[in-house]
Image: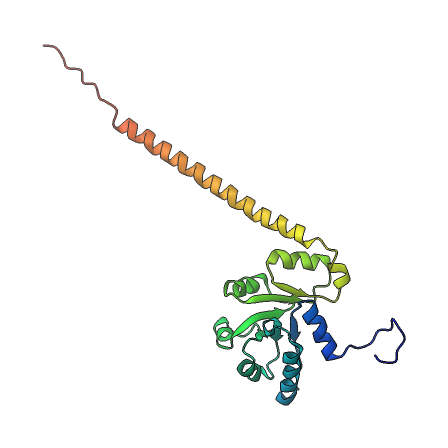
Length: 205
């Protein structure tokens, strides 16, 4: 805050937050309480537009103001945390991002991924959780432990996961080809036996 000594921590202004997001090319997620009125939402979005941020990097999570943001700022990505909403309803509401915590089963994330919905996982505050998220294929994570995650070698783990998938795929292909070759050889051998010449011994009179 203003007037504080050098090095003191203060609460940044919203404009400063947007400046950091623009300069670092970060995505911004608005997860506001539903008690805000649409007038506040409009004022908020005006500041966002004035900041010059790419609106495709802005996520709008809450239900409040969703229709307003969708109508006036269509480039803003609509996000949700409500998994109870069926996939076809998500499409109708033009949901592009699903943002939730670890309470969802793996099948949920896979279904959403198959529906071409971006996945974002929050409360990823440990290396183990980041590893799991990376292998699961989520598109982004939210963490309170940036200082830990910056030095974590999740890229190496991703390569391991991808390597395992490729390994099992190659093994499956090899098994299939060997089975196919054996089937062809067996069929060929059976056909050869069926077409072998038959000798007839005639009795001499």
